[in-house]
Image 1 (cartoon, rainbow, N blue to C red):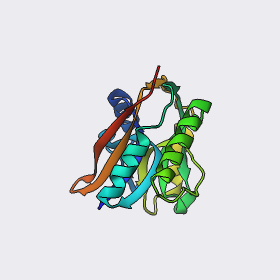
Image 2: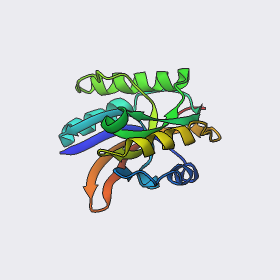
Image 3: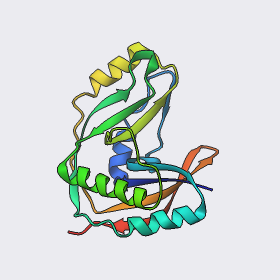
Image 4: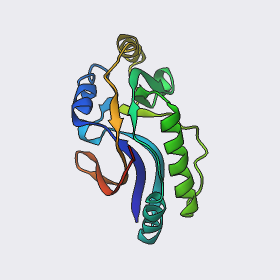
Length: 179
């Protein structure tokens, strides 16, 4: 079995910059910069034959390259119930089109459709009973975060494996976005 997701990789320099935000919140497990990405579709566990079908369907997705903007931070959940801290990614028409086409390709490959609303983001930390006050200070202190846009030129099908130091993401296939 493989545990798959489709994502936009982010440039290493940007991931390093976002990783520098980490710290100061008890109960936060900060994400390693080499694992930062923008998930287009989490697929979950599938058999290898299904993974091949998904990869083939994704190879037929066409979309143009586009600029990605990251601005501000937020949480999934609030206060003590917050599950993650993330950097917000602007939902541009180009990103929305690509995500919709990826979703359609995964469905054509026989996987159930995603029922949750697409919220583009880069996960910065996963939270477990984090200190609400420190979390609030972090969100307020980074609300004006702005980084220069980067160009999305490809999307990637990843296999997620559990490693000793956290998750390891192995690219299985890369798909170019036209210019």
